[in-house]
Length: 474
Image (cartoon, rainbow, N blue to C red):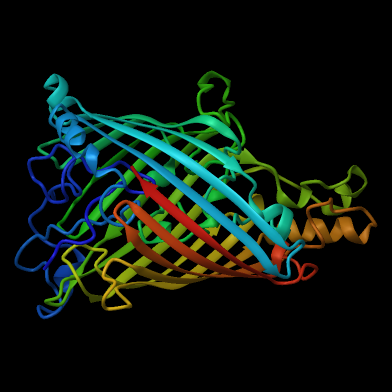
């Protein structure tokens, strides 16, 4: 079978230094397992378990822009630099999204980002076995559609722009990586985002709304979301051939602090984020259909205010009763399972069903619950093997404490502010896209979104949006 699509720059992580599965590379797609045995897969019938006899080299990634590069003339330069331990990528990503019905205002909004990424293999450069350094700088500009045209302030309806805003050179990554114990253990430390490795996947990040992680997690100040980087470290290992576990410790600072990414000393640290995540990755049937089943938990030691008291006038605080600050806990389950394979042996050459659920401490969070379900199918048109169709439904539930506080404010005759039309309860989003491998290094992706109850109230008409995303990889 042909190995398509070819390896490219992962949307939120590091580019493979060599082809997937190349055991001579310092940067392998997967770690080697500590045990030669299986975990949960060993309980499956032999006819279902493709891992029973052998480990599988089956990389899990999404190319930045279809297959190849926009400027193939740079192939020689890439090869020369790679031989000396340096890989690079330069990517343009633009999104135009317009409201065609409902919302607050009709019209089109445009945002874009330019990303430069350089990775250094210190084993080739300085004979430091297993060491590498990863850097990423980006520029962002435009006007997002969510606030002005839809009236939505929790959910970004476009993939990027929300956190860093207009920034000529935003520092996203500056971290080191070390492979230990003969590639059985991986440690990263430095400036990075949690959503590089926690609660994310290439499938999730092919959608605009959920990239780089589900919205209910991205809204939590302690869950630093790309491109918001923070000081931290992550340790990852594979206990068995079908399982992986990772632990992290990250400094917590407000999402809006240090929008440029360079002013490290000015970030106000409020606590420590401690995530842990377990993954089971079976391969099913003789067609070796991969699945990814992820359980995650994180504890943020920062003490956050009781949501019932946020924006509450002083005259109403006695009526609200006892209020207390508290840390925040987050739980997530994310699952996807390939149901058919077509056109290649890598994990993206086929169709997936996917679903997930997220819960945050409702006492101190805005969005307490999120659930989603969808599909991501490759080669729906038989002659278009690298194109991909995605459809996802998501539900967002506002914390009952926030809703109670808003009801008290409204009943007392106070304003909830310009951004809130009434006590907030829940909202729903349906997103669909068709990603077209248009040319070497170019991906064109038409988008449709339909938001039910924008602003998490029933005061804004349901919004229908259409748009186009274009990714070009140098």
